Image (tube, rainbow, N blue to C red; front, side, top):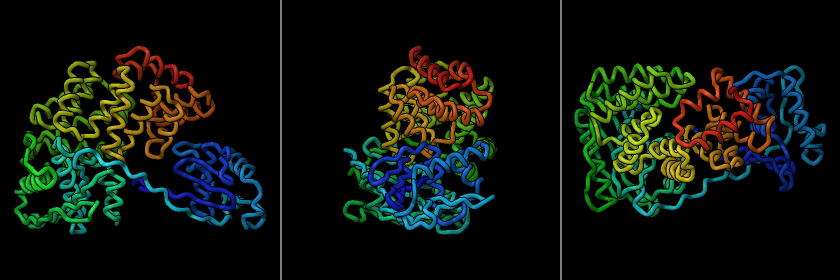
Length: 509
């Protein structure tokens, strides 16, 4: 899970900032390369411990095999940059000690400085809320999955209210299992209200406790306990949503009804599959089996079709690019989801995205517009729309969309950073793109191709080619031509700009 805060470390005259990728000596930046910073972070993070060469090579060159000599060179460069440790209380005058035939260890005394808290986000001009993960009152993993599903559904239901500002699922779940002050959470997410609670399911019954908190005053605006038959779970969700809307908006103006599953096993399978969508290829295959089973149990369950369509699209990503059969199946499933539930914004944006890849741009644009009308808080819609807008040559519009996505989802999935980095590259802001694409959240994904292009445009060709090589380890069949012909470009100049960067970085033609 992504850390909410990142510590800085002081030793001797130095301050190491892992999040910013910087090293200061007496407040002045030291010219340490990206690789050196990664190695120093690993060493400083475990002072006095012996780190094996294998551990350090994995820290400095994640996801690829390198010669041991590369590590030796980097350690030597670090020692030269750090200089003698006479003032640091280190025996032998060196910060990094060699342990023959084993590895290295950091010898200095480390002081962990105050954590860098995220800058509080300004409150929106409408009532703003985050639904924190409901606590499962059980040690049973299936119970936890049920509580997570309840949380996600409440987020979806509330986000459809145009009068509210609702934080996305990914960011809400960043706080799962964390004991934090509600005011701190609200400041980090930029909301005033928090919904929290607990859930338990047993013997065909469901018990839910929910409370709405004003994080500014600390007051509880509303709290209620529900003890119902499990068959009434969706009615309970609707009731909780209505109570919150009434408390925050002072009126009830419910959005159009959602398509609900008729089979609870199908619902459980869909809830479990959601968690696997942005994970490994193996997880994607597990999700595929769950979702296939869900639609067979409940052929009129729109959300299961939507996630299954997305699962097929993720298959394109993991296999290196779209193929005709998977494209056709994904599009058919997305159309099915929208036909079953025309009021589901999630199904609309997935269909819109796939239509863009089919070059059905007018229909895609219409579906994106409808998705936003149905759910103005669906962060994924804005992130996906950013991607499509940038490739259409509407770069400033794309930047605006991805910024809105980040505001709704401050702790997003890795692909948001890829989309932001792509937009920054398209805008010619290569330094910002490099900073974005080197973040831990996205660095080891396919976003490396845009990182390589950005570095190349800055004239940092050695770094660009190294990143291109790392990208090709995970994408051995990649060619610039195939990528250019399968991505939904609508603007020749934008296409040429990307191709130019890929070419300079040494990616295959």
